[in-house]
Amino acid sequence: MSKVVVISGHPNLESSYTNKVVLAQLQSTFSSIDIRRLDALYPDYQIDVETEQTALLDADVVVLQFPFYWYSMPALLKKWLDDVMSFNFAYGPEGDKLKGKGFIISTTIGGPAESYDPLGYNHFTVEQLLMPIQQTAYLAGMNYQKPIFTHGMVYIPGVYNTQEGVEAKAVEHAVRLSETIHYLLESPEAKVTALVKTWFEQMDKLQEDAGLFHAMLRNDVAITAPEGEFNGIAGFNDWYQVLRSTFKPNCEHVLEQIVVHEKQGEHVAEIRVRLIAETVQGEAINVLVNEEWSVDLDKDKPRIIRYKVEPV
Ligand SMILES: Cc1cc2nc3c(=O)[nH]c(=O)nc-3n(C[C@H](O)[C@H](O)[C@H](O)COP(=O)(O)O)c2cc1C
Image 1 (tube, protein in one colour):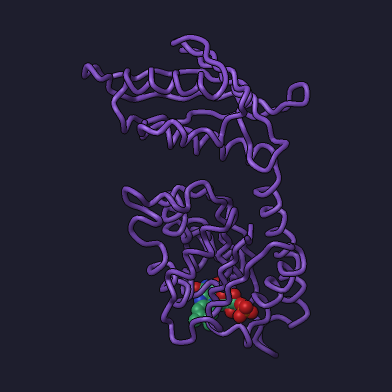
Image 2 (cartoon, rainbow, N blue to C red):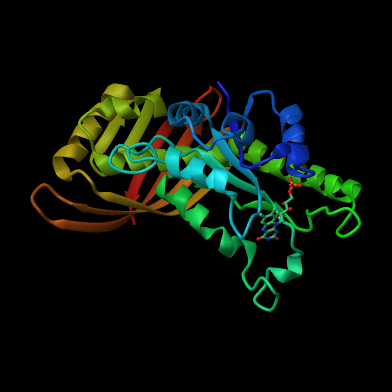
């Protein structure tokens, strides 16, 4: 199982000076990494969608690594995106397969920083130009990170830069990228935030099966809610049935704030969430609630120990 999956979109990595270095650095930094070199796997651009989707299902973090071509990604990577981010995989009623996974754009850029400015010859910032990919990640429910990019990465012998110069910048780029990957894999804040998001996305649906939440709860979970006190997994099941008999499915939890901090060795999330819902009697509800969760991060998956809800 590869925790980090890197999709290399360079159309000809043999001829690369910088992407090649970034990928080599990543390979030596992470033990559980799958670098999918699209130019070698699919020289004919015929993407094996099933294989690619399986690789993504395994991942906690997905990195798109590419040289910036015409203010976007190379055609090979765009073809990969078009084919792999399919209906009921990345979007649609069952398209939740990438939800909560970390997502990082990592790109090498030929032009200088000052050109990517309203007053520069490229007019737009790199972040603006990357927005279609950002929105793609949002639609798939992925955890979008600030993109990692480096300017002045073009090497044309005798014309632009030196090989040593661009290679050194590529190493520095890989260090920044690795920091973001480490953050996604390890920081308590990122883990708790991902848990909170997954929880509320699941709560929105209010599906019949309370078991969908059990992996997110510790066996001794204690819940304090306006509906009462509920203990353990059986208690959660009771509370969930109360919620299901109160609200119609497909409600909306809008996360307005999540602050994660450590308190006496536990990780506490202070959450402010707006519930927009309809009761089974047909009454429209729009309430703001404060929640406080204590989360156990000791095991492989984070689990809730205490869950308190208070209407504001
Ligand atoms: C087809 C093509 C299009 C490019 N378009 C851009 C661009 O829009 N903006 C830019 O700053 N650099 C552009 N470049 C420069 C590349 O971004 C640069 O050569 C690349 O990042 C270097 O990566 P490599 O050493 O791994 O090949 C382009 C290069 C090619 C070949």
